[in-house]
Length: 308
Image (cartoon, rainbow, N blue to C red; front, side):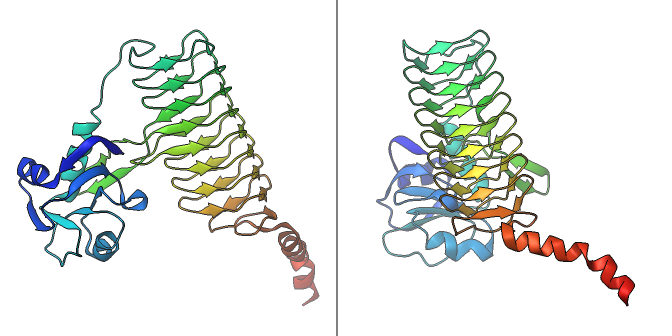
């Protein structure tokens, strides 16, 4: 998430009673989880095994619970509970705003868009020209829809990320401050859910068509002209290339990369990056001819065992 204006690190230190190590003149321009950071961002770390990954990341300001050496041009903010401070900063700049109207007065809907009965449009959402939003769909806060986007009945665009901080007192939700961006000529089927990002954006690029009852996790990026059949599920932060086809009930784990022109046959399960533009099948998903040979061999095992 980017701030509406740069924030002095000295102001943050004063507000949250933090000690500064490093450059006290820095200005924060955004706040992001470690997977999404860029220069100017604030991030946090509270587990020692991730200290160096966070400190050496693109982030300029790191909220941390231990004094460490600070690289030149960066700053560490020292406190006992980095997550609590991080989440408080997010909530301050992206507060949860209850909404009683069906369409928020802060939303923008292009005059040529069609909005059917019962559609919910959240705060600061943008719906572009010639979109068609079918009955009872949900367009969450800060969602951005391009032109000629079709959202079918009861689809949910921009729901909160399924992302929690585990503590001794249970799971604490992160405030989801990312957006959901749907580019031109995307179609999303009835009952499909697209989560917004935790701090970055969930993005579906132009021309992609998504069937009913599909789930797209937080921070996922989907390329152009993809085709996803019913009950596909894609885990958070996975990046899917262009012209990818996923048949029914394909499951893709989080934090993966799927190359351009990949085809995943029905019920396949993807647990690692797929780097070659070919057809895959099975659990775990493998190149389809190799997988079929493996299955054919397995079918011969009973005969082989009897032969012994």
